[in-house]
Amino acid sequence: MLQVTLAEGDVLGALPLPEGREACLHWAHSVTGGAVADCFENRDGQLVLVRSYLHDFAAGLGETAGRGHLVSAKGGGYWIEDIDAPMTANALDLRIGALAVDHRLSAGGETLALSRLAPSQRAQLSLIFPHTDGPGEP
Image (cartoon, rainbow, N blue to C red; front, top):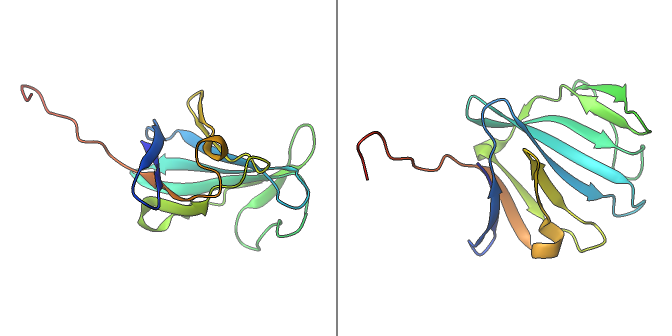
């Protein structure tokens, strides 16, 4: 599961993230309003940043040498593919943006509207492994 927990410890929500699947954090760039996304994968139990979408090379956006490669996106903008950066402690700290920023987390056809649920709050996205009872256990 990819779980969103507020700084105070309250769980905002969670989405399934099985091995090899992708979850994306989408938002609007705070200066230009253009679309931005970071996409993560569960690789052998490790949360890995695999690619990012950028609408243009606006303030603070761009490619880092040696960290993926640019691919033009259909409809404009571009993807930085093959970033392959493991997240420390299987987590990403973030400040959820205001409604205008519209942070959303999507995976497996489901979406958590983070900015609607907890605008301007500190949060953490964490890859977690919920306890499941084995055969014959209650």
